Image 1 (cartoon, helix red, strand yellow):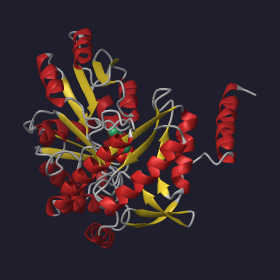
Image 2 (cartoon, helix red, strand yellow):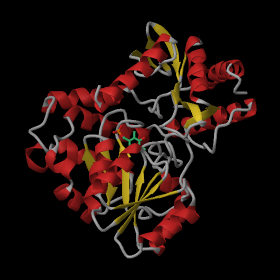
Image 3 (cartoon, rainbow, N blue to C red):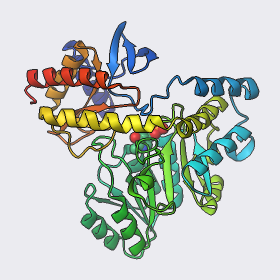
Length: 395
Ligand SMILES: *Cc1c(COP(=O)(O)O)cnc(C)c1O
């Protein structure tokens, strides 16, 4: 067998063995959302792995906006945004994002992944330097590699090491990229210090708010609100429309000249189809709901505190999480799979994250809380995690 064939066979063997041992929990189709409940294989399970942080999937106003957009525009567009694909609903969405993020303008792309890939590789190239936190999301890493700029990584949330990286980059044009909330650990970047260092070293700053939008800050506006920083602290404010915002797509918000530059040069905007109108309308309506139903952000933050405190008092290692993403570190990969099986058999839906997505020995159950969880749901989840954690020898 050739090398490609061997790779495929090895992966298939790993999946086959996990399935045979009832330890494969990825890609399970669910149907029907009902608050924090989902139906999987005919069983009603408590969802503890959703990115729908404010519980907006199925919100009647958002669903109606999507239906109305189909009635008005149909289901597709006339092509790429640069040419005939731009619709009035795209501009309305972008104006809404810019207002929400307190910037002059914003541009939407067809996914968060594509946004990072395209924006990073448009802004920097050969001879420049791109500086990235070691555990940044894969889409940031891929954007950095695609750009062909010098790729410098610094130790996770380590400001001394970031300073070293900035010095090492020397006179090159510099772009620093960080997650606001780290998607595997649930901790928050030390943004005030990152901003200070970027200014000191003349570097541009891009922040990915995939898990911060609607989560951080008193009104869910994100990481500047969380730290009380001015709206111009971040040059390039990136986020997705697929997590808190129950649609699909990604965006960048920033100064008007930056957005004009991206609209005319970033390849995903110039060469890939526009967001479908229903998705754009749903996303716009979701921002409006967040502004109107302010209780959602409060409820999420309260639920997060309650859940974290509960897990820590049971003796779980939740790293430095202070957000809606809560890792339960269990150690080796096998133990994460076993712990997941125990939870699923008790109708709690959580998922294991294992190497290489996280370092070996730091496998975890990665859980999330949302505004759809009431205190009694979280108590139930805690009871199941406690029992499973004891049986698996984690606590
Ligand atoms: C999910 C995610 C993305 C990608 O967003 P999609 O809209 O799902 O493509 C980018 N960055 C981070 C940190 C994410 O968690």
